[in-house]
Length: 207
Image (tube, rainbow, N blue to C red):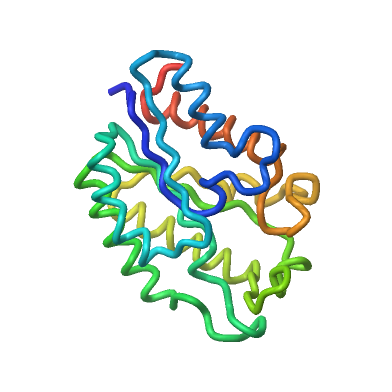
């Protein structure tokens, strides 16, 4: 089925943070998809800093309001940052994260077919700590949580767009903003191109 109406959930990357040219890969996706057909819609529903517990509360009511044919879900890294030190307490434990993701994806699929997106790698030399905060983002934690995300999604039959795997061998330096965590405009363009191809090849979107 051609997914005319697509709702995209997540946090800062979905919001479009650090793309000073076109407001993020979701906005680029919106411009492409809606230009293909006047009935097509893309809803960018990103909230900066949001974790999975908050996303779990809003995904069903916000999705149902928009009547999507497809949900794209990008949890990001807010669940796996540590407080005060690289070995400090983690925001959401791996076990709780797995349970929350299972519940989130089950609820999402009660509304429409879902696709999970893993997050892209970052430069931990600039995220330990992140800017002027007590939050530490570590790549070992990122790998672990993205692996959990993929495992849960596959166990539920949810398709995965694995940005983390796709960028694993990529030098991220030219693709990251000055904070080392968020992608710049070039990164968002890459994310858009990968998402567009995935939607056409795997989800029936019309290119």
